[in-house]
Length: 157
Image (cartoon, rainbow, N blue to C red; front, side):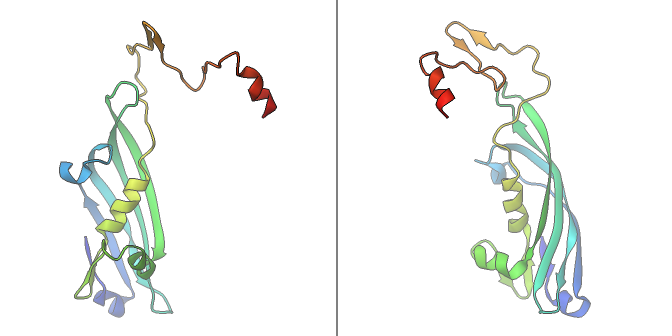
């Protein structure tokens, strides 16, 4: 997603209204199964100090694996990015290349999408999932087994 920085010198604002998708190769090792139709809206503007400010909202639905059943689960996310573009470039100079007065903002978007991935998701329709078996039991946040020998230690804290 290339943005023409020369346009900022004449207009002071470049509007962004794009949609992007990511291939399976790009999603490898992220935990995301599928990520399509990510909507990116906002603008890049030049302030009175001649700094480029990026203000965009990234919205989409990522498909993740359920932590219990491993079935695909849709997870809606929204990420707001509002930063000085030059500071972002300084933080990660190898990811952003400024070639002939254009800049690719896709690495900025990708980095913020990765920060939106939850630690775990659980599907809403877990009806036929086995929660116990021979010598094992699923422990949830509501039900937590405490060793009776160590229960008194909890009172100390």
